[in-house]
Image (cartoon, rainbow, N blue to C red; front, side, top):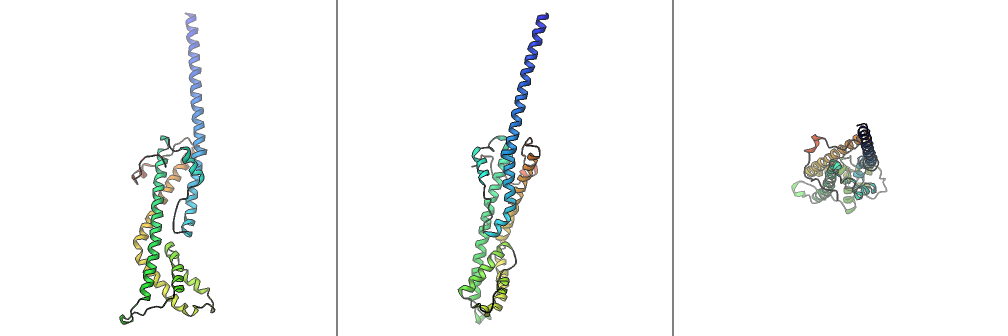
Length: 256
């Protein structure tokens, strides 16, 4: 009996030690995974998307596209397949939705720019082709002055900023060969812009809606990443329930 008790106690101790070792190993591996997720996934992605957040306006100000230019770090995360495990399903899906929103925003941006440019051409054509017999005096604009108006109006209209025409004209001296037409250009530029603005209403609304959609998804991702980082990687990235119904157009599939 004593021997049996000792054997039972010994077996219990061995089982306890093994169980404790398994638990310790599991916790150790889990801690390693949390550390990896924190340093190789969450933090690099936060840097990536904060970069998009803070440079997006600058990109918009210098080009006719508003794009998310993916960094090498982001591409490495993709290549390693870090976001493929099911635990990153929400993060993976939200990034896919951001990519879709970015594509749409780029398309809307281009459409707005093209519409502004074509509208400027159309308005300037109508000014040059006005009919005196209908009480409308045509305005003679040579190729250089026409291009000047386009160049000085297109970007301010696109960005919804104030005109650059007046500033440009204020800088010109009497030696400028078009100086005699400065009063005409001052009067003409606001009228051209007003007419163009009337023609681009739909494209402007679509572009603004796309910007809001992109910003919403971007800030949603940053909020989730911050939550995971604050927990040192222990809390998984989760998409809030309130946001899940926003867009179901992108299926749960691996990033490509």
